[in-house]
Image (cartoon, rainbow, N blue to C red):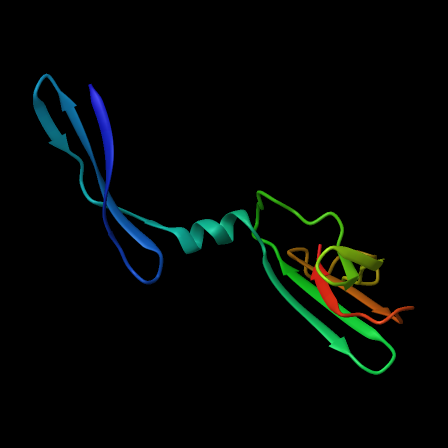
Length: 132
C-alpha cells in the first residue's frame, strides 16, 4: 500500500487544502478534503515578537516584547543587543533585562508575556545593530 499526500490549493492566508490518496492492489481511494493553516500552527509553536531600537546622540534604548502561546515549542532564554562595525565585527554586547510587570506577591501579571529592555551608551561609533 502506498500513501501519498497531495496538495490541492494554497491561498494567501497560508491555508493549505489537501487530501490523502491511498493505492492498494490497483485500487485508489481518496480521503475527504482537509485544510491546514500555517499561521495558526506557527502561533502555537512560536511566540510573537515586537522589537524597537531608539537611537539618540549618546545612548541606545532597545525593547523586545514576546507574547507566548499556551505551550510554546520554543522559548527565549536570553536577549542581547550588539553594536557592530560592519557585518563581521562585534564592538560591544549588552544583555537585555527582563522587565515583566509583577503583582504585590511577585507573580507575573501577564504570564504569557515577557518584556526585555536595555538602555546603554556605546563606547565606540555604532554602525550596524543585530538582535541575537
